[in-house]
Structure formats: structure tokens, C-alpha cells
Length: 314
Image (cartoon, rainbow, N blue to C red):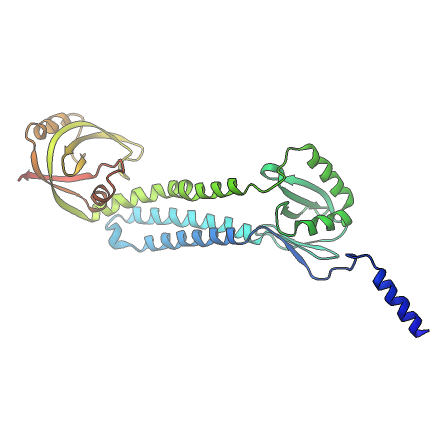
């Protein structure tokens, strides 16, 4: 009897349909980890830069407010990016045979049992996201149809949340949605975020830092004036952002265009410009070291270094 029972048992095992064995190890559904990791590391580097700026007394000189403001702005941008990367890193769904364990952003782990899910809906651009809400009025889980092991999550929902899953499938069929990942589009978007968005956010602290460095590091150089003219300068540095004021523009054959606005007003700009325009030649200029370095090494940048003072003709 024992042998017959064993044989019958063995036959039952052999006849068991393939794939019905219950899975005991959890499967994690999430996107590629390297993307949020790379983003978080870059954001942390921005925060470190902001902290370093806060203690760069030699760089900023006496411009204490500029140093603190630029540092705080940079740290804030970096902190926000770190939070964004952390949200992406934490968001995941672990699929067990008898439950889901989901984490959304900075929220706590939410255990979703069979029958808990009351609504499943598409989310995000292209409706590639999927979000489930439980009867406890909490967001149960968030995933992406292109995440790794998404098919395991879909199977679990089909078996344990049949009604909401059928409604989700019916709604998704009526919507225009992506059927494959947009690899090239996502890559271009991320590249643009780094080469356009990040430099744009860094523009304000860069401008105020440049002005502060120039004030603390003045350089004397000789430039040959070809002509001079009075005009209006706008939004050129930390001292001119959001304002317009009179200035004298020097055209030189060896230093490019220089801008002199200290002590220049609408009433005297033309007279001062005429003085240098009628007496061209080499003059000694005191300029900001950083601004003039940009002029010397990156002449294609549309930038006019500021002149602090002008000496007598050489």
C-alpha cells in the first residue's frame, strides 16, 4: 500500500501542470536603479558645492550676503534634486504569493492583501503608469508597465483583484497609451535636463558669484581703445539684474568690448565716451579677474567685462 501510494503520489506530481507551483520568494517590481542613483549622486554633488561656497571667503571677499545667498540657493537646488532621486529609489512593489508590499516615495511600507485593492488606474504620460488604491484610503502601490517583473504584478492583480483589474484593462483599452518604452525620447529628455535645466538653475548663483569674485580680485591690464560710446546696460551682473543704467562701452582691438558704468549717469555718459573716442590708444584698465578670464579663454561668449577704473594713456 505504501508503494502504491507513493507511485500514485509520484504520478500526481508528474501530472501536475507546469507553472502551478506556488512561488515563495518575493519579486520586486521597479524600474532601472542606475538612473535615480546617478541623479541622486549628481544632486548630492551640487549640495556639496553649495556647502563649499558657504565657506569660500577668499573667493567672495567682503560680499557676505552674496556668498550666503548663492550658497543657500545652490544647496536648495541640490536638496530638491536629492529628494526627487530618493523618491524614485524608494518607490517599488514587492510581490509575494499572498500579498504586496509597496513603498511610494517617502511613505511607509504598505501591505496590500488580496481583496484590499478597490481601484486600479493608469497614470503618467502615455498612461504607462499603474496605480492601485486600497479600501483604507491609502495609495496601495505605484508601478510602471515597463518595469522589470511587471508581468508578475499583473498576474497577482488578475488573481487577487479581479474586478478592479478588469476595469483597469477596459479603461486602458479606451485610452491612447504607449505599448513600448520610449528609449530615445527618455534619453534625450534626460540629456536636456542636464545640459539645459541644470545650467539654467545655476545661472543666478553663477552670476552673483562672478560679480563677487570680480570685486575681490581686480586685475590690471592694458587695452588699446579704438572707439567709445555711451549707452544703456541691462541685466549684466549681480549688480544689474532687473535694472538698466547708463554706461560707456569701449571697443578695443586686443581686449574686445569693455563696459564702464561706475560713476556713469545719463547726463555724463556721452561726454565721457567722447573723451576716449577722440583720443584712442592704449589705456590701463582695472577689470574683474573672472570676467576678463572668460573674455580671454571663451571669446565666443557674449560677455562684456566690467571696468572698475581707467588709468592714463600709456
